[in-house]
Length: 204
Figure 1 (cartoon, rainbow, N blue to C red):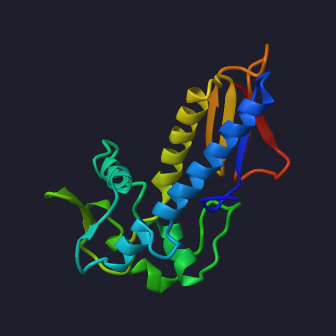
Figure 2: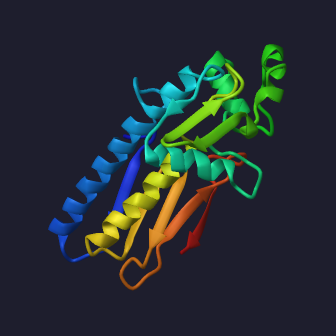
């Protein structure tokens, strides 16, 4: 368990020792990044940034700076590291529904929704890396982009260790490389609004 979800690694190889050693390095890398960019761990870059929201800029690590900055510069106009309505519901203790087309949001939270804006996050570099947030309370950053970054780092570690056929799964993030022997990797995708036992399987 790391970064709030289960991390599962699979490799197709004849050298179990190398695979086991590589897996240990990946687990350690996930834990390192979790300590650096977790919203729950005391002293992490993200927590310090959220604590200073609306007050002052915070100097963060190069890795955190790159994760935040890449999201802000995203051509999609979205910021995966910014607060979402579900993040507000979780923070306030409101319930959410996973198998319906909508989730209940308290009226008091609806007034705060306009404050959710990736443009409230300012990323700058002036001698040192710094990040600041304009709005207090709602302009908070989650660690959503950190997990994708951790998966990419993990794939690089496995390849550096000589593994080419592997699968990395961390919550909803999935990375597949090569094949499972003579067969392609197969993954199951569950419809979040469909029956719990209905899974669509695809070869990769």
